[in-house]
Image (cartoon, rainbow, N blue to C red; front, side, top):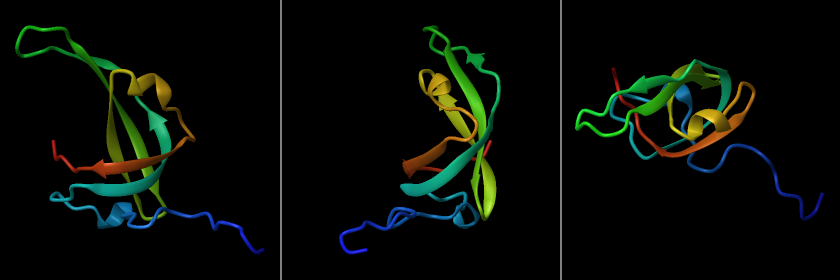
Length: 92
């Protein structure tokens, strides 16, 4: 129809299979497959501990682990679709 906006991934979106250890400033559209239990990470400088949880996310090409910090943890649940902008890959 005239005037309709097509839905789909944003322009410049990277597929999960195309992410590399050097990927940075990556834009990825993923679905949350599951979220793990939060863990407390001590602050090396003696400050307040931070909470982190791992979420398995993916698209039709593969899955990755996404680290969720602090307030992000409660705002993401299984089935959500996330648009990650300017993300980077970190190997641990």
